[in-house]
Amino acid sequence: EPEVTQTPSHQVTQMGQEVILRCVPISNHLYFYWYRQILGQKVEFLVSFYNNEISEKSEIFDDQFSVERPDGSNFTLKIRSTKLEDSAMYFCASRGQGATGYTFGSGTRLTVV
Amino acid sequence: AQSVTQPDIHITVSEGASLELRCNYSYGATPYLFWYVQSPGQGLQLLLKYFSGDTLVQGIKGFEAEFKRSQSSFNLRKPSVHWSDAAEYFCAVGTANDYKLSFGAGTTVTVRA
Image 1 (cartoon, rainbow over the protein chains, first blue to last red):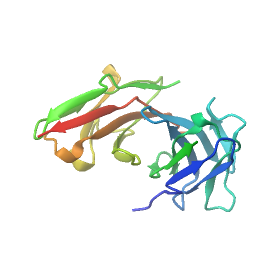
Image 2: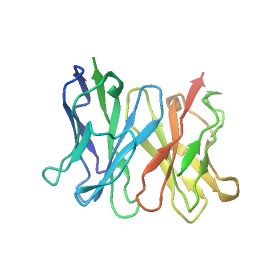
Image 3: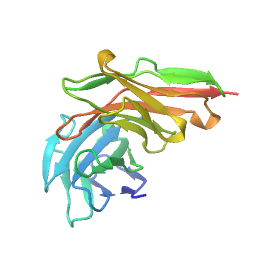
Image 4: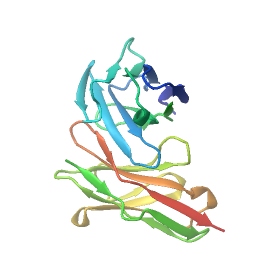
């Protein structure tokens, strides 16, 4: 069964550092998402991406965040200057037309120290 | 904007007993509804989804859910739980245009022997 792949599975970074979280969506999918889950809390939408541009973003997704699809296969989330409160599990998701095959990756646990 | 309420934060059930997890949603149009399961430190696994058609949806691992428009509910059930069903369960609702998902706060299921 096709999978959404996220790397790394766990990243520890110092406050103020830049991090890039990587995702390889399912190959024929067109719509891409990032969600995050702070420990013990619910999963929250961050951003959706289609046709090489952001479709929608939440209030969490401020100027410190950016997304990119650099090469037609990867989908990345960059946090420019990490804060302690950015510590969370970050999930990538992708889908085809409609909600076909809406699939989440296994997540990247980001720890900011 | 859509939202999801999972009224039960924690449910304890005996192995072999039945399980029902409640989910109520708020959305003005036809909802797209999902149930996910998450084991500690792991990603989100799709149990089942509802888009249209038969309001009783069968999923993986013996789970089913019933969409009741009149009650704005999408409750998850399993006739006989196994110890491996101990996990956190999330209900989510998606919008019809971009399928951005809004998640409930989750219900933690503990299975006692």
